[in-house]
Image (cartoon, rainbow over the protein chains, first blue to last red):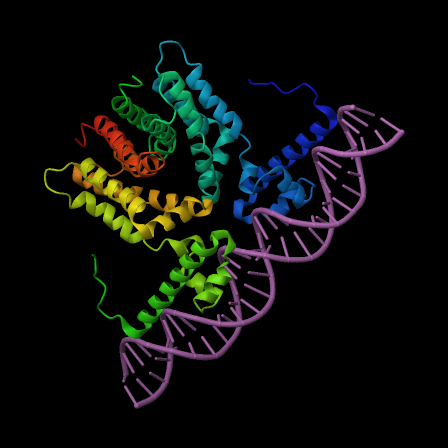
Length: 196
Length: 196
DNA sequence: TTAGAAAGTGTAGTGATTGCACTTTCTGAG
DNA sequence: CTCAGAAAGTGCAATCACTACACTTTCTAA
């Protein structure tokens, strides 16, 4: 939805993107087939028909091969806050957004296997978690703007962190939906003076 | 403070403990001197006068060399909840405990350098964080006992997680003390029905 | 047209971590 | 006391992610 880069694709850029995609695809396929630990970066590179050196020019590490969505994820999160329906509180908007993510992960057929792979591979689970929590600062800034407070206020940073953490917290429960509701209800009480 | 293991030390156990300690000491010294990344496990092993293989029989990885306090840390956390002064709420007790940790890390001269080392070394910072968050389940159980709720209730798990996260949250602020107070005030509001 | 940036390659290396086969050192039952 | 075996320690070779380097092959843009 946020397409701002089509001014001069150039053959070069196209090839580059193609290689990158080939790597990501090969990686996901192999990981799902054999398991993360049973696949070496060498295998991925070979499957994508490039050298290992090239692989590392495109991705910062083995885990990064599976998470190419960082930017989109963050953009969606911030958009959920900034472009919420008028009259909606930020917490309502965030709750809805997180619910969407949970549903997507749990019910979309394609995401199922991916989700399982990540959850059953400690290295990947951690990486995903780290990556997700890295949105904390961005979210805190967005919240600060909406609430009219400084972005480095402890209460705002904490709220941002707690909202993000709510995802894993709810996701780890037997029944994620109600769990998410409960957590957000409590957050609303605690932050009633800032976000209703 | 929790000494329950003196039944049959045996020369063997003693030597084992000594080797372990020698490794931990050598590691901390070298890391502080040269920096974590500038020291190889080989160097540590040599400094402690054992083989690299032996080092890995004692510690699960390079990072673990610096964190030998996992069990004590958890015990202290749980104790802060279970052995709190009568009439004190669990959140009061936890807040006091966390404040103690912050003060200790910031003012005790010996801990200063250690703290800095950990914070300036991504690998260590992450490891410490992971390790700390691993107390979540234990804390949730302790809380559940005190509050008379099931340990896997989302609200309890979330509270445990949020309390633990409060440490880093406050520690990252310019003025940790007030930040901690503010966060706990909000948590108390949100969880008023469970922990006053 | 051509200089140079950018993509890609192969080789060789480092550093953490593991497996294996082995020696040494204690401990506990007989 | 002694001896079998568990546990601690050793050395070596290998794996695996990742990096540095020096090089070739495109493309692009002035």
